[in-house]
Each structure stands twice: as structure tokens, then as C-alpha cells.
Length: 341
Image (cartoon, rainbow, N blue to C red; front, side, top):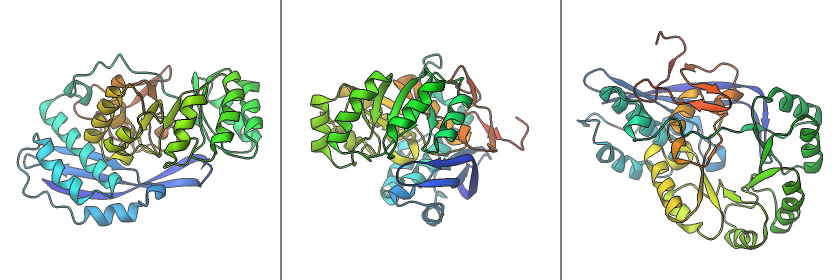
């Protein structure tokens, strides 16, 4: 197979701010795999500086990848296993190759990915829509604009968390999910969970630093709200380690290395009676659609990254009543905006 890649810059509609960073654009990477028959699969890397990955580091790693000796692309594990060793510290680059390979296989077999995995597209939970940290006026505007979404994911960890929630509640009765991005202590989390529960909050995502497992165990014994791990849950081994620490995990393809390890994480979580959320970074609808095909296996969807950008370079992923409609075209099911489907 021939591997090529190029920059995939994404401009955001508004500044996206969480406790540790803010950005107006993201530099992702588009990967293409073409086999000997000319069939092409596409994948997207969404690198995060939090995990010491950038578009530059992704392209540097991809430059050292050779797939020229690969024969049958249907031998997924034979192809991906050695790459996981080579790219073990570069999950977003690995994810892009993994997604592109699954897209290629689906196209060759004439099957959408969800059908290839044996999943029911009707069993897709509604996605949340993210409200980042901003001025109260901006939060009010964004909340009003998200009126079509019955679930809002709210970024907290600022000095005015109560004011943020009060502002949202002035204009919306949507269910709320809180993501503190590791900004709180155990004591702050317990205190916040009590009043947040009264505000219609469903869960708390990553309130503590990622390695504070003792703190998470304390929360499990005391918090009235379910705790979902994000930054703490990057690999299947992490899910094992988190047993008894959290109620569930947020799985992101660029964080774990693609669809294959994401499936492993889902199965490990279910074996430990843990809930599963499928999340994302800021991505085009190519990366979002790839993750969406796993939604029938999950409890929560947080796949709105493509809705936060100005000009999505791909088409084919629709949202109806806050639910992502899984594309029924072969593979991932999306196509470049400048192409005719």
C-alpha cells in the first residue's frame, strides 16, 4: 500500500477554551492509504499538545512508516500490530492509519463500518454539544445557539463556575455534563457535585489530575454523580487500572490509537461494569464519523468536534435531533467536500 499525508487545518467558529488552553484553529493531518487496486482509505490525526503530539510530530512519524510490503489489507491485525510498536508514543498518527485502513477495507467489501462491525445504527445515543469557558455573555449566546441539543457538555474549572451554570440555566433546561479537565481537587469536586446535582447535571468528567487514582477512589465512595475518566483513560491497560476509581471512561480515537484499541477499551470497560463514552477532539467529520460508527456500543456520545469548525472539509455525516446518522456508504462513509459523491 501507498501511504501519503498532508496538513488538514481547521478554523474554529469561536475560540475554544478549557482550563489549560485556548485555540482558534487546529492543525490536524489527513492520511491516505491506496492499495494495489487503486482503492483508497482516509484517516485523520487530531494531535493534542497535552499528549505531547503536534501536526509536525505526526508527519515526522508518518515519514518513517512504510507499508510497501503490505499485501491483503483485510489482515488488519497483521498490518496494525507492528505499527503500534513503532508508533507507541504517537497515538494520533497511529489512529489516522488505523482509520484509513478500516475505511479502505469497508470500501473494498462494499460495507459501511458499522455493518462490518455488526452494529445496529439505530442504537446511537444523542450527542452532547460543548460549551467552552468564555465570558458570560458569550456562554449565553452559545447556549441559545445550541437549543437543538438536549444535552450540553459544559467546561468548568474557572473562577466563576457557579455563574457559568446560572447563566446557562437562564436560557436552557438541557441536561448538563460537566468537564473540569482535571482542574479540581477532591474537596472541590465533592462540594461542586452537590450543587451541580441540583442543577440537572448527569455526570462529571475528569475532575482530578489523571494520575490521582487515590483521589478518584475517594470520589467513588462519596460523590452523588457518576465520574467519567478522560485524560486518565488512553489505553486498554488504563481501563483495567481505573477499575474501582471511576464509573466510566471517555474513549477518543486519536487518544487511544484508532478503532482497534477503542474496541478493546469498550470491551474491557464492559467486563468491569463501567460505562462508555465516545468523545473527540476538534476534528473534521472524517474523524468524527469514524468514531461515530462505534456509538451503538456506548452509553454517551460526545461527538461535536466537526460542529465547532467553520468549513468542514468533508461531507456525508448528518445530525438529526442531536443524533449522528451513521453513513451507509462503504467504509467510514464521508467524502471530500470538493468531490462528487
